Length: 268
Image (cartoon, rainbow, N blue to C red; front, side, top):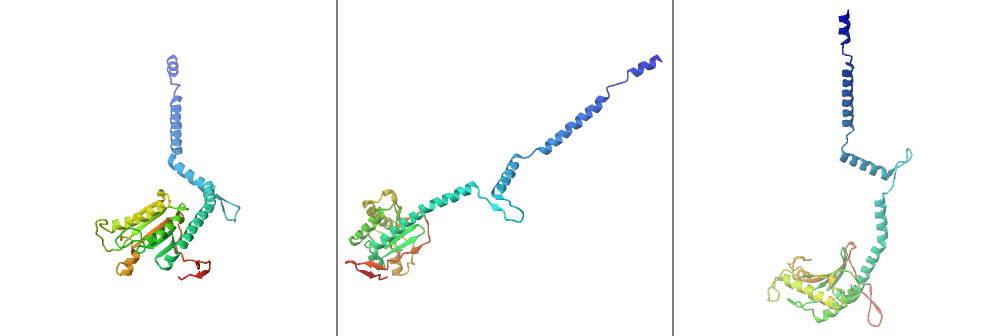
């Protein structure tokens, strides 16, 4: 009997640790799974968050059956305010440009009536198109004296404004080859520069002036007939504007004041 009791006392009473260890292992596995499920891609989360914020910031849902009310964001409100505040400035610029066009029409009225000059309001501002036959002798780039005075009058109108001015020289497709002008490129460029120098001498700031020679690359009529070639030989003065508008040709005023103050009808 004594030997049996001794064997019973040697039984392992710490077997509960096995069950405890299994429980701890399962609990650890559980938390690992929970952590894996809770891990979210940060980039995707930010995209979703920004989309939700943007959607619910702009729309306020009213009671059932009513149309949602769209509330402009601060950026949109700022844009609308900026547009409204700049409208008086834009209108002022338009008025200044139209006054310039009106004054040019007045000083160029005789040439407009003869069909030698056209004044148009384009998407870039005001365009003065002058037939080069009244400005220069054939193959030359010196201003003819009668037109120098008219161009001086145009310069006096433009010197009072602050719009940029681009002077374009154009020719027909008849080639030229002289010591001074090896091609139409040189001829058109020098003619444009001649007008630019006149404007600069009249007091127009140099930074407002640009001269370009296009030769025969931008015809307004086919160069087949003499009339078309004459139309293409021109100098164009562009008074640039930052407010583009649809191009419409300007007509000479219905009444023109003649010497003595008596108005007469336009001959157009």
